[in-house]
Amino acid sequence: MRIQELSVSERIVLAEKLWDSIVDGDESIALPEKQKNELDRRLQAFLDDQDVGSSWAEVKERIINKV
Image 1 (cartoon, rainbow, N blue to C red):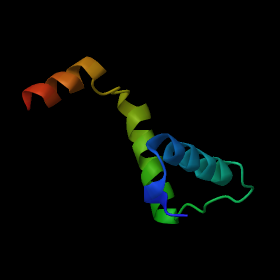
Image 2: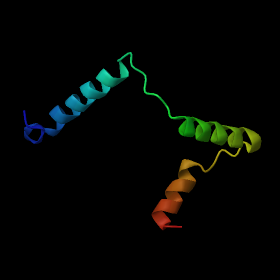
Image 3: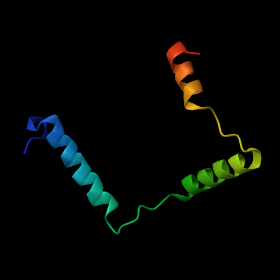
Image 4: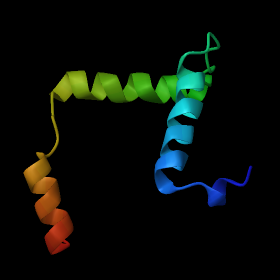
């Protein structure tokens, strides 16, 4: 099977099935210690100052106006 020969909708279904096969699997993907530490650091930084960041409207405005 050549993926390029499938229609867009068929490729989307294939991608969904592939993703589902990963999600449904019992295997867990090991998180390297360095990434775990970084996630913990970021979570703690958020908990310390509770900065929720920008709203979607603000982000969209910056993107559109290249601010």
